[in-house]
Image (tube, rainbow, N blue to C red; front, side, top):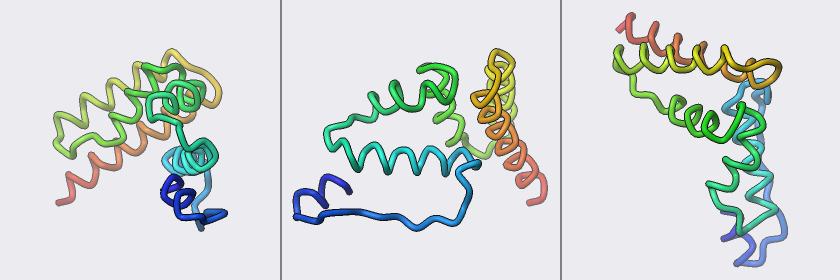
Length: 117
C-alpha cells in the first residue's frame, strides 16, 4: 500500500487504531505499517529478521510465532501449537517472553471457542 501511495504521489499515510500495542498482533501491525511505510524496498524476510526477531527471541522464533498466529482451529493443531509456544517461552525472558505468553493465551482462547460450538 505504501508503494502504491508513493507511486501515485500521495505524501502520507495514516492508520486509526484504538487497541493497545500491548496486544502483540497490533504491535506487529503498527511496526509493519511504520517500517514498510518508510522503507518501500523492505522485504518480508528482512522485516522478520531485522524487526520481529529482536521482539520474539530470534529469527526462527519470529517465523514460528507468525506461523502459530495462523494456526487452524482443529484441536490437535491447537494442542501442538500451544506446546510449541510453551517450549519457546521457557527459553525467553522479559518482553519476548511476554509476547509468547500472549500467544499462548490466544491459542487457549481458540481452544475454548472450539469447545463451545
